[in-house]
Image (cartoon, rainbow, N blue to C red; front, side):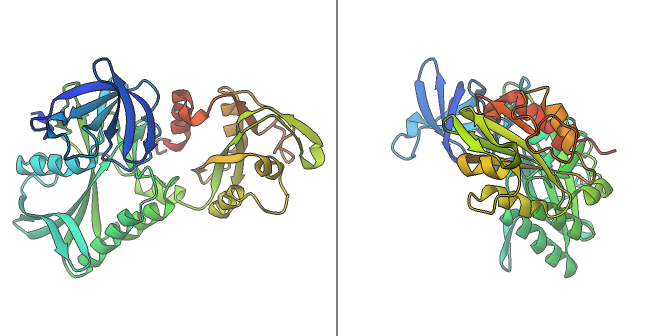
Length: 383
């Protein structure tokens, strides 16, 4: 059985993504309406989904003009030929329908007692009941996936981490508590917390897993925005997560140099750097978070080659790739197949690599090929 989204009477059309001025607004274009601005009910980064020209599914609220900040709402984005639902508020509506139809594995026998249930300082999505008593359920929408792996969250979520701790506290009083991740694709086999992006969330999941039951349900989507739940939950590889969710691994520093410059770089002498984007590959097998924070700071004592370039360039992003094994040189070799190395000897004084610095005229974070490459490293299938 498949289900439709709770769209209501608002007409649905497709448009093409142009830009995202802020977390809750996108600019897009279709042939009839031209360039429009649409509300995006999802504050996640979504950087692996939004590229110029990608197809969006948009609701038209023109009949309600004057009651909204914009006349349009983005509800989904196309990836690999299938929609990915973005509307975070509708995820709970989907879950409510699936629970009512007994379509969620392990929760086939429950009934919904209440929604938005307040308990102490907390508010949880559902209070359920089965023959054994009550169950508190929190629902999260997962849009980050690749290489057969789904991960949550795609941005740091202190609120989400707090929900886990509050559920664990509730469980200690004898209540049964669960978290359901609705994974917006049927192309994943494994689910993991995104320990690269939010290590605190991942470590909290590990900390409370003996008190809170975690579930990940895949959902397939049709081009007409109908969804169908999977018949089994995704595997959560706990031991793999425990091994990899540590403050260590490799990282990528993405920099933008506004104009061509001659920059002294320690023992390498003065080097010429073209205007554009640079990606530096480094590693820290201890204290990765502190290393990343250091790279973000412009003022510091010059120590590594990257410090000299960082003093002249702006940080676009720093992307950790946490792992229990040292990957820096392998990562650099692999990135060399995607973009050219530059500045021989840069960042590789203790290895035999040609360079750990790479150049791109365009922002790599806006290139689908770069995100696909990054997912291959961040979303490694459990061994």
